Length: 157
Ligand SMILES: CC(C)(COP(=O)(O)OP(=O)(O)OC[C@H]1O[C@@H](n2cnc3c(N)ncnc32)[C@H](O)[C@@H]1OP(=O)(O)O)[C@@H](O)C(=O)NCCC(=O)NCCS
Image 1 (cartoon, rainbow, N blue to C red):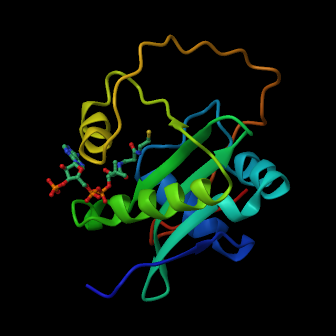
Image 2 (spheres, rainbow, N blue to C red):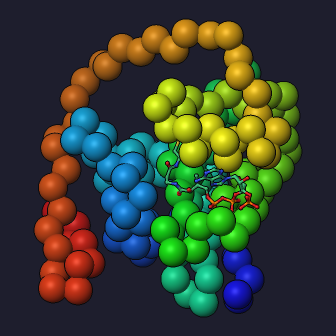
């Protein structure tokens, strides 16, 4: 396999990245991925990472540091390239970026039902924390509804 090149997201990647998230089941009605990208590009764009192989975006990872803890979202690997170490490489890269910023610990949230992802995180050194995650939505995004052309590529609204 050609090697993985990890770099910061650019707006020209947007369609490929959202397509990847859809393929990986990460786009849900209450999360508009275009708005998520827009917010991240205002906050700390260097931590929205993509992995490229031969010019194609095959992976992503959105990291964040709030001055106390690091966070990880949108970790995704193209389905036909999973189980080849790509997510492990993305996470190592993101962890190093967060460490450079002085981040001492990463927290992340995974649905309890998502046993495979939990197995992945255990494998790369993450442990259970006895916490309850609470949340409160401050406003709703516009619903996201891409269309598809015949090749099943998304066309962004
Ligand atoms: C989770 C995900 C990012 C893992 O990507 P990946 O590139 O396949 O992961 P790696 O190849 O680096 O896996 C490293 C190790 O983690 C464990 N692992 C990874 N995927 C696993 C799975 N589906 N089931 C069980 N263990 C798994 C294995 O021990 C694996 O090593 P091995 O292949 O030698 O057994 C990928 O499955 C994915 O994109 N899933 C859909 C999106 C998603 O749910 N993201 C998480 C949001 S919280």
